[in-house]
Image (cartoon, rainbow, N blue to C red):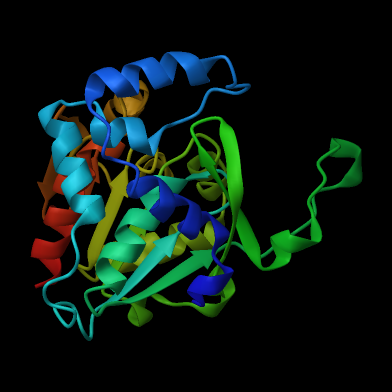
Length: 261
């Protein structure tokens, strides 16, 4: 993917460099800026600088440069998402593994205009891009590499499902996404999902008897789908990897890395 076309990536990287403030200064700025927030949003800067150990670990993950740019050379990763994906949960694994030599492919459902009587309208850009969010605020469009029609399980070594409120809710109804997950899981390849991403795994029917986690609001659904629910940063059960929230990205990325080596 041409990085010059990824506006949201540039915005995120700009945010990642804004980390020199101390927590007290950040708190004052936060109170000042809250008045300008029109929609609930997710602040990468705040998650990096709030001072808790998990904040420091996330900051390190986002800012550290790859020491071995060929660490994952030859590994093929599918990032499967659609409109409403959580920006940090897609771009972080994309950048991390791509900077270390992996071939990372953003895969999305093919654009299909919904029936007009439903009232949904999409811009022309949706034919080549998907819309990212920060919690409830739209953040921009990212170009995907392939549609679900154009890929198969044999094309990849791992599949990653980012979260976002709308993204997994739409993706779980995509039959080609579900069949891709099922086939890769059957082949023993890594399936990883974070935050609301595990919602898609319910429809894939692969959770029975599997240890799993997700954002708190999904835990009852995972249990009802046969999963053995745990409330911890990352859960690894064979080739299935799940995590709870963006603050768990260091553990999530670490678990995927270990599986790929």
